[in-house]
Length: 105
Image (cartoon, rainbow, N blue to C red; front, side):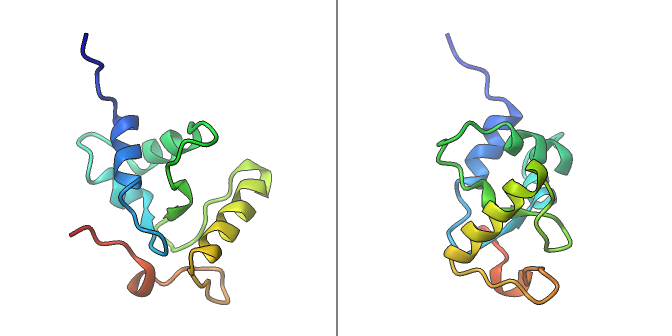
């Protein structure tokens, strides 16, 4: 029996392709999946089990910021993970897409 590939599966596979030190937006990911929205990408990533291996921290909002989640705990973790990959936040806590934005080849 073939397992049906869901939009969540597609989100996870795309996010796995984002290299360390780079970021993509929810909207950018959604445009790669027919019928998907940025919000759906967020829901998919929020449903990830711990230790999934999917680098969820590399997906941020279109303003270049970390979207609040997990009562702030998840946001702080995401910030720390991105910094550990070499991503530098500007003074307003945004990330420069020109320097850190992911463009798939």
